Image 1 (cartoon, one colour):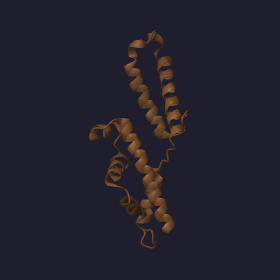
Image 2: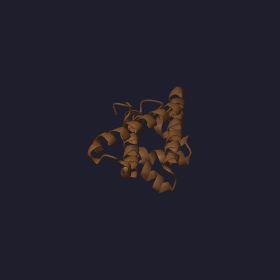
Image 3: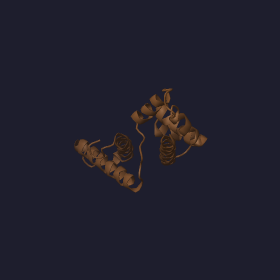
Image 4: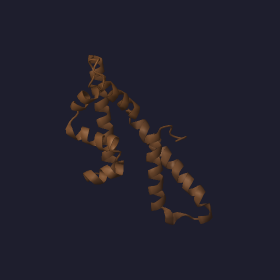
Length: 145
């Protein structure tokens, strides 16, 4: 978290570090320095996540923003009382599905990859695309109001 400054990226880096550590367990030259070796693997995984983040401009929609939008959807005194519902309707079914499974049901990228039978990178890409589409739809709905 200190390296990446973003909880989602930190989780990705941690998961990647453990996968790499497991795969490379047999390459440890000095088992007494396992902790230092594992830290190096974690730092390298963090760097890789950071590099990939710079290449892609991730626009994260925070849970608090969704909660605020959902709370506004419950107020009957505004024209944009159903901003989130309307914005979600602008997404195609695949985008809505992946957002609901990941953000509302709390399923991990690995679980989604297994569920949909696609690679984890594809899940991440689809989540990124769906988040961007949702953000545009929310922006369009709030601008129209």
